[in-house]
Length: 309
Image 1 (cartoon, rainbow, N blue to C red):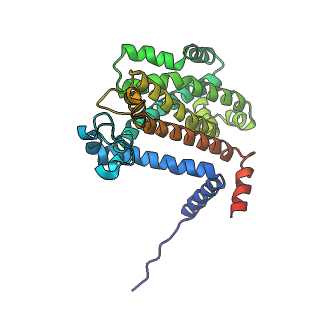
Image 2 (tube, rainbow, N blue to C red; image 1 turned 90 degrees about the vertical axis):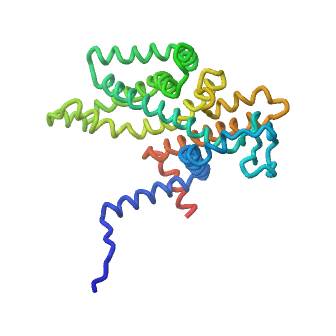
Image 3 (tube, rainbow, N blue to C red; image 1 turned 135 degrees about the horizontal axis):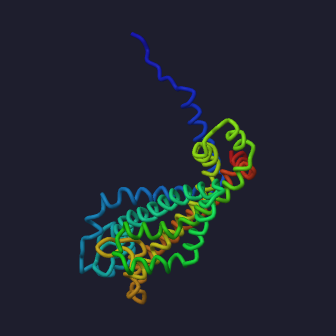
């Protein structure tokens, strides 16, 4: 009988080493570590919450209207209290995380994709495209993003798809201008000129040589922009032109609790706290990414990791 051995390929060892290095850099920044753990919890709630707690979050119990927090007599779901219809706030916050995160992720992905492609073209082209595309970004940025979203959503149905589309359009100039600035600087570098001499097509140079170089910058911007989009969606829901009942988001929960601030502050406090902590965690993680992805500043985290080790 021959013994079976698990063979670990060099590529697997390389991936393990890379993951270990990332975790060490993250552990060197304790605030970023806490932020990452909190965001993992939020993502888990967004994925599993609607599946596990949707029935609990929508079940009405008029005897528990505006139930105070930390009253476990009604069950664990009422640890944060109940809303104006006796529905448990904890379950509703967990379920609402799904819609809030879906809108934010959708808007960031769409704006990142469209904006980076337009930015690559605008930065590389020396003809009409290089002049027209930046002017398009200037036109969009000339309108306040929240005001533009309000105007469009007044004319359209306030559905999830429309909110994602509106918020994505308002954020496209951020990625377009960032990508264009990076391309304008990189197209004069030696490796780009060498690729041109070797006969590489402009498309190949943009997507295989330049784009990987600016992905760290775009990742940092997207992480920070994620918090802005989430706050914008919460603002729209608070104004009553975002997600409509029976769907729920954190911003809508804050808006629904506004009439009860004097006698049931917890209706708006807990979803508002979730918004604040998520935005703060995204900002802390964005700051860590900016340092970790910059070779000239990464030594700060590496030195911190050695001291902690």
